[in-house]
Length: 67
Image (cartoon, rainbow, N blue to C red; front, side):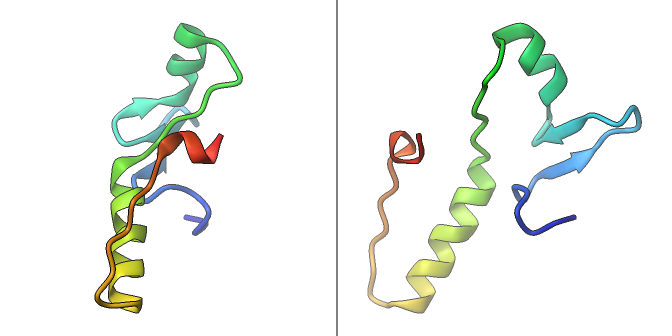
């Protein structure tokens, strides 16, 4: 899958984008759009990469910063 997608992203058998175990079509129907879905494993993978690149480092991420 394209590296821009979250780590846990996949396309389901019916063609829906699924992030983690969440079908984004169902999320959009339930909560409306636009909708931002955060994928914790993706955030953790990127934080780990930063901390390896600049040790000793502590990385803090505020989800609101993305919006």
